[in-house]
Image (cartoon, rainbow, N blue to C red; front, side, top):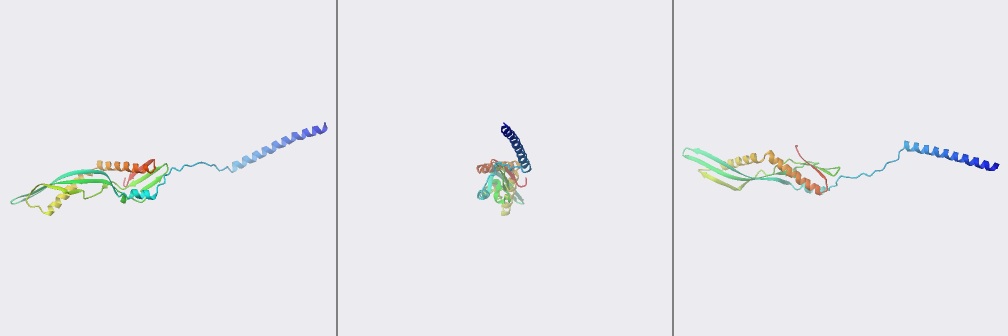
Amino acid sequence: MTWRKAIGSLLRWWWVGAAAIVAVAVAYIYKGVTDNPPVSLRVVHNTRIDVTPEQIMAVRDIGQWEFLTINTEEVVEWEHKRTFGTDRLVRIYQGTLRLGVDMQKVSDGWFVSLPDSTAQLTLPPVSLLDERFIDEARTRSFYERGTVTPDVLDQLYAQAQQKMRRRCLTPQNMQAAETNARQQFERIFRQMGFKRVIVKFDGK
C-alpha cells in the first residue's frame, strides 16, 4: 500500500505543477500580446474611379460647347438732315447669340477624381462664343432715302450689335446656360462611372 500512496501523492502534485505551468504560460502570452498587439487586417474598398487621360482629353478637345442659343432681331435707324432734304436709313438685323464654354480655356487641374466615386470639374465661365453673331446675309433695309455712306452702315451695325448684347446677355440667360452645362457634364461623367459630379465655374 505504501507504493500506491506514493504514486497517488506524486500524481496529485503533478497536476498541481502542470496547472502552475499553464498559469505562467497564459500570463506570459497575455503580456506579450499587450506589449506587441497583433497586426489587424481590414479590407479597404477603393471608391476612386480611374479615368484614362485619353478620356479627359476627349472632353477638353470638344472645344467650344454651346449650351444656349438666342435668336434675336434689332431695328436700327439713322437720319441726317441737310439743307435740301433728309437722308434716312432704317435697317433690320438678324442675330444668333450662342452662349457656352470654351474647353480650350480650361485651367490645369480642371478635372479631379475624388473618393466616393466623385468627379470635380472646374469649367471656364459661360460666355458669348462668337462675337460676330449678326447674320449680314439676312440684314435688310426697311427704309432708305438719300445718300448713305459705308461709315453709316458700320455705325448701324455696331449699334445693332450693342443692343443685342445688352438684351440677350442677361444674368437669367447666363444662368440658364450654366444649368445646361452642368446637366451635360454630369451626364458625360456619370457614363464614365462616377456617382457624383461637382461642376464649378472659374470666378465663382
